[in-house]
Image 1 (spheres, rainbow, N blue to C red):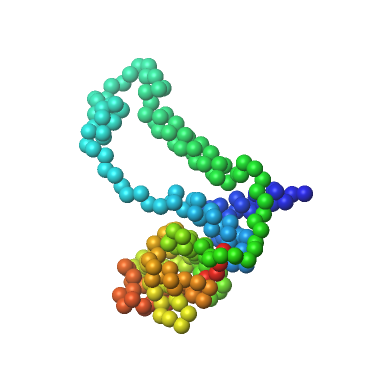
Image 2: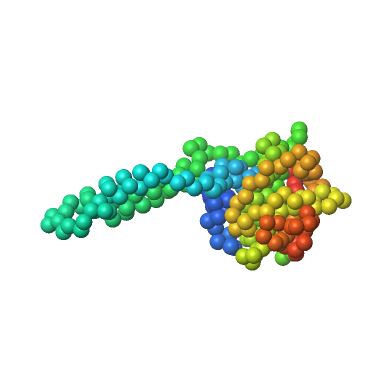
Length: 246
């Protein structure tokens, strides 16, 4: 039997999907699984919660001037050029740079192996009808062709919505993609502007949380830079999808 092996392969595919490592065909295949399989949707949502914080942007921090001066002094950048007859290889700056790159690559490989390989076999999830309030919801936001452009995971307990690109549409440089919540029978409510090819986490205020549910939907429109100037979609709606419990 190879059920454990196949489960590991699927688990790795879902992690690679969240990290954006799959090609277009493989991403589209996983997006279809997310749309049709509660197990796949739950697995992708779990990987999004684990891995997406690693991709969040960190603000630049300028070091004090004396740090760079000390680095230049230690590496002898400002020293006059002197031809040494027998320079030690340990004084070679290029060597240290390559060693640093190699160490970074090894650390990245160890991280992937750690997060993608469980220490003990994991049984397939058992899907049962929810006995209490749903705290996690998902949506596959697809274009008219049916190809998923983005997947969205809504964590009600944390008041967060996470959008991850699947096969996003190409958007002009002078345009933004904007996410909308569409309650049943109501007008679209802006969730916010996001980069079409990068994950984006939104904080949901109470007004938006109260409108979430299986009768609502999500949609993506193309808007001017900064978002719609009217509070309603002004450009073409390029993708939409229903919200369902995960």
